[in-house]
Image (cartoon, rainbow, N blue to C red; front, side, top):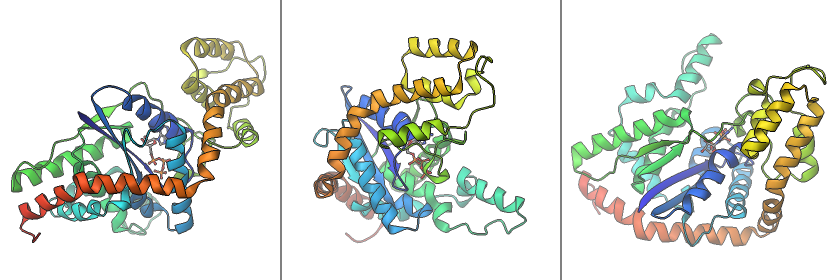
Amino acid sequence: PTRVLTGITTSGTPHLGNYVGAIRPAIAASREPGVESYYFLADYHALIKVQDPARVQRSTLEIAASWLACGLEPDQVRFYRQSDIPETTELTWLLTCVAGKGILNRAHAYKAAVDRNREAGEDDDAGVTAGLFMYPVLMAADILLFNAHKVPVGRDQIQHIEMARDFAQRFNHLYGEHFVLPEVVIEEQVATLPGLDGRKMSKSYDNTIPLFAPRGELRKLIYSIVTDSRAPGEAKDADTSNVFQLYRAFASTGETSAMRQAFADGIAWGDAKAALFERIDAEVAPLREKYEALIAQPAQIEEILRAGAARLREERALPTLRALRDAVGLRN
Ligand code: ATP
């Protein structure tokens, strides 16, 4: 089978971008024949950005409940919390010792931090933790631990998959063929959703629409999306509109062309937002009900996660690390 890996960072409440960009396509893909799906809650990754333990815990529960509410079947897939598989961190060290520092210097997240510092007249590395610098190695460990063949990601993540391939290749060259070289899968038809302020919707920007916001809050948030000041009756540009980008991610092709026409005809922002709210709510309302029932049973979710990790450690993580320890000369 083709092993496909998807993770969501437990850095906050899951949002519509996570749903459209990760959860919805990953669950659809898991139902295809010949696919072995791995879904994980990236809580080691969360620590790079979030130093609030309650937030990490809450987020873990919310993201787990979201996957389950959206139809993930824990018996049919591999579903686990990253930190329940400590072999991940051990593999991270083995990979750290073959990873070129120069390659990590070029990672987007690190370079962006350096650029911000330079603009502010600070030292290049001011406020940059080694965790941020090293995070492509942790991500490579997530992928290589289970020898995932495919990793569906957004464009901004292509570089990280290339790094994982590079580390795997160096390791294989030194110690024998242990790792499959993972392939990046760019989901061309999967949109990157804008957040309330027009930047990419992201837990880190506080600009999100939570996937399972209660109906009233969902409506309020949608009405707060930033728009331009064109009046009702004035033609509006669908392609630059956040409202339209969001609508398109939830609507059929027919509904989308009708909305494009309505924009050209000068639909009022209030009416466009009302249509957007109705469209999103129609899709998420049945899932929201399941989510609310699940989140009220945290012990049950915990049990699913523990069972998922226990099985994976036994079947794969422990034997893999045993072989890798042997390969590099550590005692087993
Ligand atoms: P963080 O700010 O902590 O990185 P995030 O909300 O930006 O969080 P991640 O947890 O890093 O998202 O990403 C999980 C998955 O959700 C990834 O597959 C990513 O491509 C997808 N995703 C995140 N934001 C969006 C978005 N705005 N539109 C589409 N997909 C998104």
